[in-house]
Amino acid sequence: MRRLTGPTSRSFRQVPRVRRTHGGAILLEVVLSLAMFCVTAGVVFSGLSASYDTASRMKSQALAGDLAVTKLSEITMGEVELADKGPVEYDQADLAGWSWEVAVAPMELTNVLMADKEVQVKVTIRQAESGLVYRLVCLMPSPGTSSEQDSLEDPYSGGLP
Figure (cartoon, helix red, strand yellow):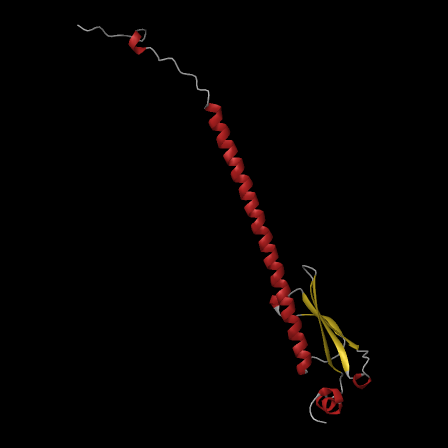
């Protein structure tokens, strides 16, 4: 007959544990890799945020330039009177917070033949939210002068005398 061995017998004794000396090192590696990941994610996020801000600012500047050229074209075509006007808010819903202003000033030219025939037109576009201000300046014929008649009278305009 075979004898059953109990917990006190040698076969059921627990094997003594070996002390691990690198258990803390693995935890340290995990913590360091997590910290490196967080720092990298922060750098990437700040880079994306800066590029988004720059793209938004460039989009606003391009829109302001388009609005200024459009307003100058409206003045040239006669849809808007060539006079000081503004600031005037845009009526469109997508241009809420945008305004335009037109300032007309006589030009002081050294050429006696061209005196009082041209004015300086300054179109200013503003966005209240970001504080963006865009200015476009152009020389235009004075109101009441005909550019075709001026070119015939002006000896410097070219062509045959």
